[in-house]
Image (cartoon, rainbow, N blue to C red; front, side, top):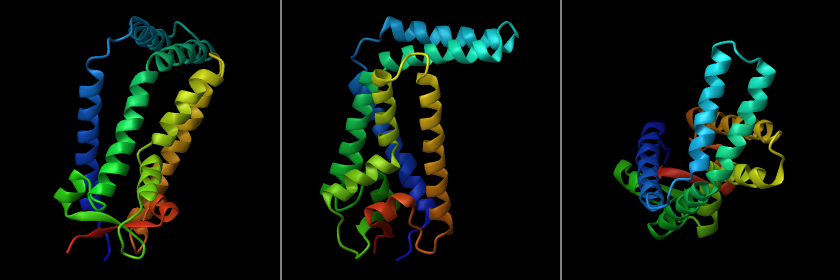
Length: 196
């Protein structure tokens, strides 16, 4: 059966809200780093200085890049928790729920293998890594520890550009392909079907 875009979008929004709430509950007890707050405040001051014409584009990119690096390094624990929760929810929970997350249950759709059978646990994990930005979050975490403070911003921007391109290609494929499969579905050999 053909999957429809609107039920998938509704399920996606519901599931992202659920994952966000779970992450919020898990990270609520972690004390916020003063270095993270300082880096965010510094970034805001840099943006204000740039908007007021007080610093050049070159100086803005340098200073903001360093502030972004500092904030990202201090935010690693939150990103790791987000990755774990995302994989557990969209990979493991969906596997044990016959290809359905809570959002998909409410939208009356489910993930299936291309042959119509239930997808494997590994295909659901790979699907979650591709679809829910896990791979890009992971790359940003790695960059925090591998690249220098002065070049992190450019790596981060490159990763964000690829992430946006992947998202747009996936949405376009889901909208315009006859079978409604996105790039992640093609890679993982899955499809989203309406429940009967």
